[in-house]
Amino acid sequence: MMRLIDLARGGDRAAEDELFQFLHVRFLCIAKRRIGEKDAEDLAQDACLTVLQKYKSLPDNEHLEAWAYNILRNKIGNYLQGRLLKPHSGVTGKLSGYPLEPQAKQSDPMLRSVLTGCLRKLYRVYPRYARAINLSHQGYGTVEICRRMAITPNHLYVMLNRCRKMLRECIESGKLSNE
Amino acid sequence: MSPGNYQMNNQCIDPEIGILLHAYELKLLDEENATRFEMHLLKCRYCFEEVQLFSEESDILHADNKIKNLTAKEAFPGFVKRLWRYLWPEMPVIFRPVVEILIILLIAVPAWFVFHGRGEKQVRPIYTIALMPLRSAPESGYKLSSGADVLLNFVYENAAPQKKYRIEIRDKSGQEFYRNDSFAGFDKYGVGQLLVTRNSLKAGIYHMIIEDPEDSSNLNRQEYYIPIMP
Image (tube, rainbow over all chains, first blue to last red; front, side):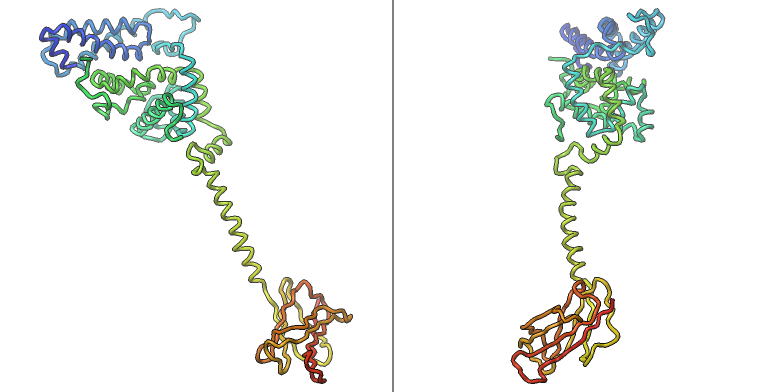
């Protein structure tokens, strides 16, 4: 990112386009996780434009990522604040328990079936993974999950990443690595 | 040149933050760590690509109701399921506890029968009776413990080792209890031994006669009485 900004500052048009693309995919990814699919695209684009308008006025490149990220965060914050103030317009008319939680999109049945099969296998090998995921479904965060499972956060992260790796391998190959 | 291709994308540039990857995908992180990780996503191509590639799976994992039900069931399995998982876990068949228990039983049970069962037979108690030559049946007798076989010790004067003698034991009614026409169990002192199983010996007085078939003289015969108490 630094290199692209340096080039763009020097007047390289292609580098500026590339910088826009670079930021856009990342901002979109983050925004989707924060606010859901619906308005993520607009918000990411808006944040990218702000960065492109202002990056030349920055004195140095040292904290550029943090600065760019803060622009996105502010946009997300404003968006969520706006959504809180708006009356809910759900199809069913019911209020969600978590109004800021992105709406779950319809999942691919094929992928869900593969994932279910792999999870069954994985849960047999790592029942603690099932426990952690179950607690996350109940809305607990890292601290509470670690307290309930009597493990440290680091231990939890390592276990989650290990299981994620096995899950990915299983989805790709159809079997767990230790089968 | 694609964005960010100045860095390696096959590993995370900061594993200390990269370790938060799956926790981030599952939305487990608090605001501080989520912010740290999202800033990391702007720098680390590897983590960004991982999040992108696994986004659909992590959405399903996080929010799908069927997955939630499955997870809830698997997180708190019943006793039978837990026992079965313990006995038949996901590992090569040879290492599964059920197989190991079976192998141990297959080795241990026959071994127990061989070493314990046979050993018990070998150390079965023996009751030794040293017979005294008497002219008539004694009034008192031998009280044998149950289960103990009886070893009869007796003397036949001038008996030679390896030479064959006739031994005959009759009960009180005169019925033959034991007969051996070629008994060769005397040692050089003329002492012979005869093992009789306890079960075959009933209470009563037994009459034992030892003879040398080659000797026709009157002094050839040696007699013993074996009184067994009930």
